[in-house]
Length: 157
Image (cartoon, rainbow, N blue to C red; front, side, top):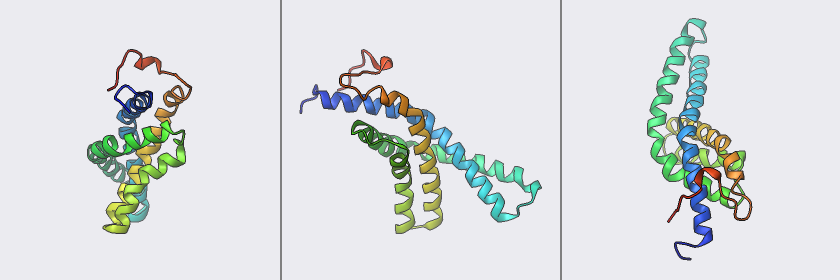
């Protein structure tokens, strides 16, 4: 297949849509993961109402760190794999959840369970947030010859 083949251009369109969705999905998903982390930390530590603000602050800090640490995995692993799934018609909430949770699951098995658990939660949250943001635009690519209006005139090589 050459650089101008229809399959390659189609995957490129899916990849662009996926990468754009990751731009918003990464911070939104990290924020959701940060809230989950904060509530878990709050519930397991003291459970006292006066400690809730501290737990939320810690959750927001962890979310910020997760956003920065998640840039490379999201753009180099998550977005291309999600674009491939979308190209094949397999992108849905469950497949996005699996793609996001897989690195954390592997880390739990191979190395550190605590770090793996964090990677699993944040990866799953980012993947589902990205899926929610990408699915409408991706569905416009589904038909034969369908091109998203925002990508008209864009040539992908």
